[in-house]
Length: 81
Length: 217
Image (cartoon, rainbow over all chains, first blue to last red; front, side, top):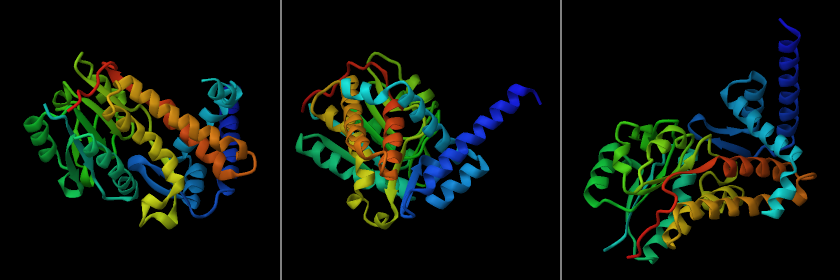
């Protein structure tokens, strides 16, 4: 495995840890509907992110898009629009 | 000429049940505007019913609630309603698909001058509270998402163009996010909802002729 591949895996693990930490803060009553994949409880979402399955990857992608937008100043942009 | 609208409302799981329940308001508004609404609810949301009605009544507006993928939108029990094989039936119409991914290929195939397709090029996600599964209209968390999504149809039936209606919906998503942001640092629900609303807003697209609008009745 190259250094670049190791670095990518490490970043991915860090993001998943961050997503799981955020999901753990949600109330157990929370559910997320993700189209045909289904509607998931907090526990199921955490398990999916840990397994890195399709549901987990979708949740991770949403988080990454939000983090990227924040980095690019989305709050200011939303206010200005 | 009477304006006509067809809406599909499958109800076979929590996601479709929420979409179906939250569509009642847009049906009511459409009727107020004297739009003749054909409601393909539950078991009526089949390919046979939809194809027959599209050919028979030729509606100006088609609202598809249900699951989907890049090439299809599904009906009740996930029967394929519209795919690349029969998407020509959407020609000459404005379609809004509250459905995952269908704007990617299906929406792009609706590229005629007399056709518009508003949908999502990624998963359509929304958050809800378990305690409201049996009464979705009371779920204020889901309301943030579905209220913003419904603006596409509410704007279309007011006579706005497809492009303007998508922009109006995005404005409601944006307002919902801005309302959540002040508490996002302390309230994990607010942060989660804001991220998901942002995702839906970002992935709603208008394909085809964005200048199309519904002729008034």
